[in-house]
Amino acid sequence: MAQSEYILTARGLHKSYGKGRARVEVLGGLDLSLRGGEFLAVMGPSGCGKTTLLHILGLIALPDAGTIALDGREIPAGPRTRTTLRRTHIGLVFQRLNLISVLTAADNVGISLRVRGEENNGRVEELFEALGIAHVSGHKPAEMSMGEQQRVAVARALAHRPAVLLADEPTGSLDSANSRTLLEIFRETNHRDGQTIVMITHSPDVAAYADRIVHMKDGILLDDN
Image (cartoon, rainbow, N blue to C red; front, side, top):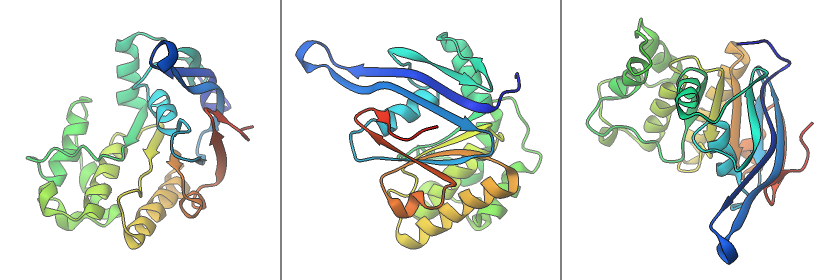
């Protein structure tokens, strides 16, 4: 892709749901600029549009208006191009982990490589070791703790070395100890590997792990540069 000062930019994003009197505006002309290697936390109360923003940045949903660009190149609306870019350039960690119940932890991560036409070549084992979950490699989700499942989901998101990792309230279902472990992993991955991260959260304690914090209210960012 072309080189740009910003790895991800959003301009004038609008998104509404419903029609007529039931129409609710979720994003109201939002702008965002993200530099490569940046760890950004987006804070805001429930219902302010954080998850909608993440889904649009992750090329899962289309905005009603506005543009998204990766590394300076505007992304078209066509589903085929968006799917390809999502698979190759974006990693996603959802609140609902969406692990496949009949597969082991290693296979849950390995399948994310196979659907992208990539070989494992030790990548899964490397991630499991770094994330401290090598001991659950052969376990299915029901045999793992919530913290272990969350780290498997992070490994799956990082396996293909995405340009941008998007995490939606990644500590929402974790206790304090597992939350700290996960956030330290994010920070280490960011500092060691230069992984670009956008993390959605409502918690100041969670946001403090990021290098930059922006606040969201009523569908716009209040303090992005």
